[in-house]
Picture 1 (cartoon, rainbow, N blue to C red):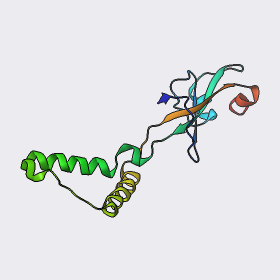
Picture 2 (picture 1 turned 90 degrees about the vertical axis):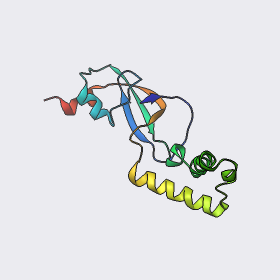
Picture 3 (picture 1 turned 60 degrees about the vertical axis):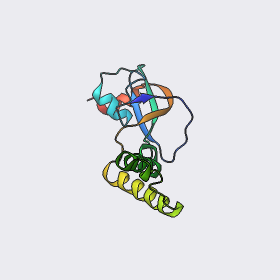
Picture 4 (picture 1 turned 135 degrees about the horizontal axis):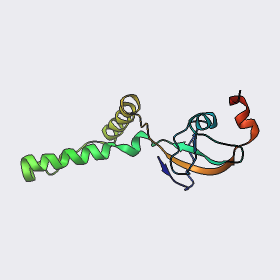
Length: 130
């Protein structure tokens, strides 16, 4: 996971936590406390996990460009103007790719935004102490 501080606003950002401001692998403060020996006063970091949108990974233009390059490789100048698709066809392919990525290859990785320091309190540790 990368730490980024750029302002990027996406709906329903997920929370993530880190002990070193680099590896934001915990999905909650409880998870972070459970996986590290933290004491009252320890400084940790909270951020928003930003998953890439499917259209950031591939889009219809990528597919059309690759098809054109391969057509030229196969047929030379006879494949130069291939494929010539309408805006509607391009949009249909875009919609299909977004749906396919969302269903079959949704990103499990993320970058982080809005990193904030957080100091562990007695209350944070109390439910875990016995």
